Amino acid sequence: MIKSFNYANFFNTVFNNNLFIPEYDWMFVDKKLKEWLKRYLPANIFATIMVLIVSWIIVLLTKNYILAAFIASIVETITYYSFILVRDVIYARKLSISKNRKYTFVSFLKNVRNLFLEFGVGEVLDTFIVRPFFLYFTPRLVRNYTIGLIIGKYVSDLIFYIPTIISYELRKKHLKD
Image (cartoon, rainbow, N blue to C red; front, side):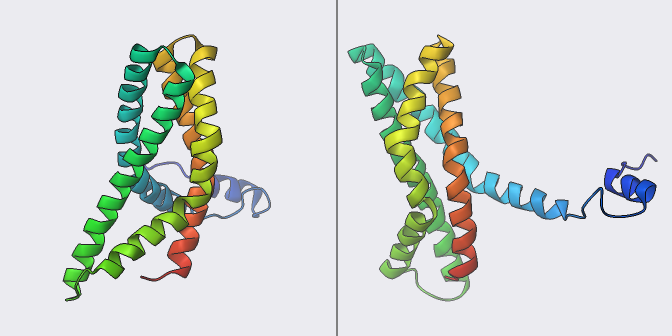
């Protein structure tokens, strides 16, 4: 049976100290990455499909790429947050039922509050500046509208998820609903 090779142990053995390879819990990183992908990826895929559909429709109807970029950005925002909110509400309702509590309007408002806390900072920058910029200029730069939209969308996503993940982790740490 072949065992997997552990580079950190190898280098620690060779150099016999931790100056070269700092010890780090890579399982923690793997766990966090899986958690973030599980939380954000399904909504992101659904929103991507909507961006492509809406953007193409706007371009076909108006030939206005700037309008298409802004409308696609707004549609993506609505689609993405609707997906996240519905999933969070379903989870919160199941959790309430398992604890023999009712899911109330106040519970729903907590779900909405959590969305604002998690996404607020990143979303304001993303919707009005970052995403329209990349959805407009990337297709022009790549010279292929569909591929440019996809690249522009995912560049915007990378920028968007930095403050979003930080806010998500802070919200989980400090708000125990």
